[in-house]
Structures are given as structure tokens and as C-alpha cells.
Length: 40
Image (cartoon, rainbow, N blue to C red; front, side, top):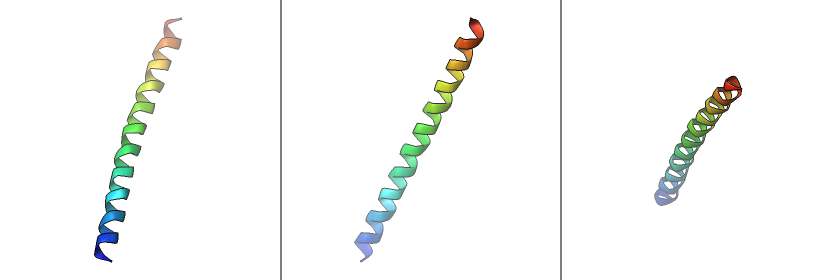
């Protein structure tokens, strides 16, 4: 049972890390799109 809990916590942790990376990439993409639209 303990190993299952450790596996679940590890999965949640890696999921949070991937979500953080996705959020940062989305913010960077949004800022670059705003900069491109302002230059026109």
C-alpha cells in the first residue's frame, strides 16, 4: 500500500511540473503574439 501512495504522489508531482512548464510556455507564446501584433 505504501508503494502505491508513493507512486501516486510521484505521478501528481510530475503532472504538476508538466503543467507549470505548459503554463510558462503558454504565457511566453501569448506575450510574443502580443508583441508581433503591436509591431504591425
